[in-house]
Image (cartoon, rainbow, N blue to C red; front, side):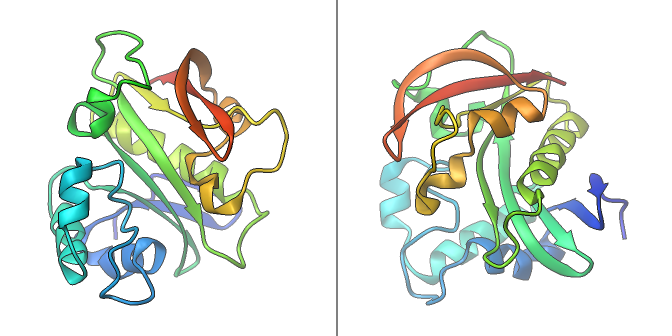
Length: 199
């Protein structure tokens, strides 16, 4: 097995390869395979494509992503058990490249980290921090000059769990990211900001 991207306190982070697709399914697949939700596609592909991709075709689409040279994200493990997911990809490949609400800071080929999920029953252990470090490590490994996130600036207030996947400004600050710009986007009633970290 390949060495982990990062490890801390018994947790390791690995790229979401095709061999790990069942773990991707565990983290972002719906309980009911015919559901037209999640699979972490709403910010990966244009809204029209996301609406048209139905049921098991969503799983097939993501499985195909795991076979590409650039994987769709990273997975966190506690031993052999998958406990977290973070989506990371070149911004140019994502709808963020055309966003009217989240500005481009400059013309660098930034990579985006836009979804961080920790499995229920494993929260409160710092897994999101390890995941973010792993996502950054993967982006750097793939040649990213700079990495961005678009978390909420919640100023310590509680964020609804269903919307917490975007992360918080503090999570990104703890990982060495700096505030680069405000945005016109919101999530769970909080403003979102552009946080950046050089590779």
